[in-house]
Image 1: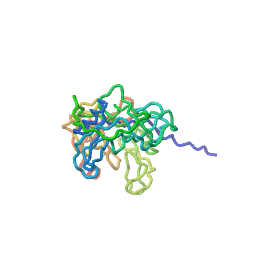
Image 2 (image 1 turned 45 degrees about the vertical axis):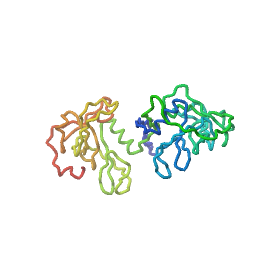
Image 3 (image 1 turned 120 degrees about the vertical axis):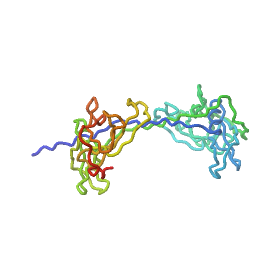
Length: 320
C-alpha cells in the first residue's frame, strides 16, 4: 500500500482593513451634530411639511435644498427592532441590546440607534423610549449613548430652531473598519510558501500556456484550472513604473520612490514591486532588476538593478 501525503494546510490569517474617512460638514449636518453635543436633536422640514431626522441637505423626493431646521423631542416611539445577542467591539453597548428605529416626537422618519433593555421580552414595537445622553459629548452621533425605556406622552409639534450654536462642529472623522479572517486559497498558499523559501512560483495555463504570477488557481482568459507550477525569476524587467511623492502613513520609506510593474523572467504577466538601490530619476522601462529580500526572508522587500544591459522593448512589450 502506498502512503498518501495530505496536501499542505491552506494559509489563514486575521486581517484588518481600516480607513479613517474625513469629511467637512454643511450647515445642516453641522447644526445636527453640534446640537447633539448640546443635548438638542434637530431635524429639517421639507416643502411638504415632513420633518426628517436625521436631517438631510436635500429633499429625497424633489432634490430641493433644505434649510428649515426644527427641534424635535428627545423622546420617541420604537417603530421596529432586532435583538443583538453578541455586541461587537465598537458598538454602542457592551452588553446585549436591541437595535431600534425610533421616530422621535415631532419627526416623520426614524433614527437608528441602540436600546438598552434587559432582554428581548422587554422590547416591542410601539414602546416609548427616550435619549440617554453620553456623559462626554463632542458633536457626534455617539453623543446619544443609547435609548432607554421611558413612559411619556408624545410631544405634539417640533419647534423652529435657527441651528446656531457656539463653536460649531465643522468636520468629522468616521473610521471605517473591517475585521475578518482571510484565506488566500490553495494557489496563493503555494505561492506564499515558496516566497518563504526565497523562490517565486507561478502557475501555467494548460490551454494558453501563460504563466500567472502570483497564481490565481485558474486562467481568467481560458477559464481552466492552472495546476502546473512553474518557478520564475528571480530576475526580471521593469515594464512600466510611477514615481510616488506622497508618504504613506506608517510606511518607513522616504519619498520620492518608484513603484513598478516587473515582468519576472518566465512569467506571463508583470507583478508590482518597489525599486531601490538607484536614484528614482534613473529608473526606466527595460531596466533589469533582482529581488532584495526582507530581513525575515519571507518576501522581496524591493528590487534593485542587476547591472545587466536593459532589455529590448520587443521582449516585454506584450507585458505592459
